[in-house]
Amino acid sequence: MVSSKKKKVCVVGAGVSGLVSARELRREGHDVTVMEQSGGVGGQWLYDPRTDGDDPRRGRRAQGSIYASLRLNTPRESMGFSDFPFFPSNDGAGVDARRYPVHGEFLRYIRDFCDAFGLMDVVRFNTKILHVGPLAPRGHDGGVPRWTVRCSSRRGGCEGDAVTAEEVFDAVVVAVGQHNQPRLPAINGMDKWSRRQLHSHSYRAPDSFKDQVVVVVGCRPSGTDIALELREAARDVHISVKSMDDGVTVFPGMRQAVSRHHNLHLHLQANRLLVRGRAGGVRRRLLHCRRRHHLLHRVRLLVPVPGHGRSGHRHRRRQPYKHTFPPALAPALSFVGVPKRVVVPRFYEAQAMWVAQVLSGRRTLPPEAEMARAAEEYNRAREAAGVPKRLTHDIFDLEYCDAFGETRCGFPRLEDRKKELLWSSVKSISRCHGELP
Ligand SMILES: Cc1cc2nc3c(=O)[nH]c(=O)nc-3n(C[C@H](O)[C@H](O)[C@H](O)COP(=O)(O)OP(=O)(O)OC[C@H]3O[C@@H](n4cnc5c(N)ncnc54)[C@H](O)[C@@H]3O)c2cc1C
Image 1: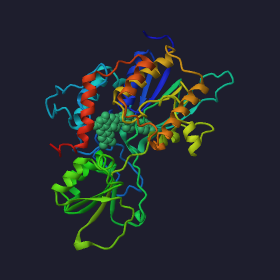
Image 2 (image 1 turned 60 degrees about the vertical axis):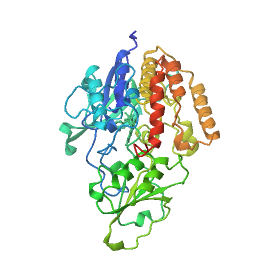
Image 3 (image 1 turned 90 degrees about the horizontal axis):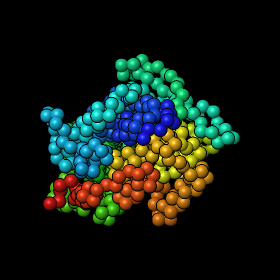
Image 4 (image 1 turned 180 degrees about the horizontal axis):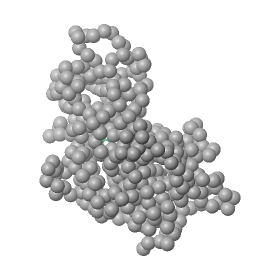
């Protein structure tokens, strides 16, 4: 059913979250424009051979974080949208029909999804959103604010030829992703380290590490992948981990890999860097493979919310209701793609469907105070369970994902077979991508 309450909606970002938001909003009868800062769809999956250079402390240019050899670590069966399965592409050249294919196969799937639902027509490429702000403060009648969106568009994708413009929308869906802001660890002496250091965000291939000694900080999926790949080019790879607990920061397979390969070494947390000259002419490099900043750190810059600053308490108060609607600005402002360790992209699809239905009036939200209270209770429960603040939106619960979709918007549950596959992939990540039998 298409509602007559058609809204003019701006979606920020053309990754999987933004694209599925556009599809759901259009299905619900809304008028949609997607603004995308890069020249193509796919977000993280649009491989960008450029990097931020060799010093993560300096400014950045590259948006994508994926490296050349990256393969999906979730099975293709669970990586499809609910009604558009991720089958091997028929495209011929470069097709990777494996269950865990290379990244280009998923990009191809995203492009097919856009073609199937006519989404290319609604995306404005090379258009970066600079600011989103309410057109006028929310009235005493509680009326929903409209939004002024300021963006900068590069004609023909050229840097020097940008035009800034403003446009008014009834609603804004923020889908800017969360894996493109490197988060650096605090290591003593890091600022004085004159040798090369980079974040995994800027890692693409091992070639430039040939015969070097490399310290890899962090040993989760990216760190593990990269360390194992580097081992083949570098002289020595030293992996620094927070704790030696198997399964917590060291995947069991990594320990096996270390015992098998003479140039792979595991160390407890690097907390000090000393520059002591060149050991035998060997060049040393430091590679940070830590998590990336959470999405909300960035959204705060994009969407200033009155009365909500950066302090911890206020930060908590800004938490969106059910990871989606900031209570004070709902439903005109929403976030799709905030939760991590959910079934991607299905969870984002359910969020998008919910947003579209709320905007058309098919679903209603609780009053603002109730949403704020629910978000607060959720946070308190997470805190009580010892979950660090930065992991507020890490879900890692397939039942929660199903319940979210079903309750919010009647989204179908993930089939048991696919759940089993997903769980087995989580276990196989622990086996270090094939390092264990
Ligand atoms: C190394 C790596 C490996 C991964 N492997 C897997 C995997 O195997 N399985 C899995 O399920 N997930 C994986 N992920 C997670 C992956 O990021 C998500 O699957 C998914 O791509 C998130 O999509 P998104 O649309 O939310 O964000 P993104 O893909 O980041 O897209 C956000 C889009 O917003 C645009 N944007 C941002 N700011 C602005 C602005 N101001 N104006 C206009 N446009 C803007 C960006 O250019 C981008 O196109 C991986 C991530 C990384 C980094």
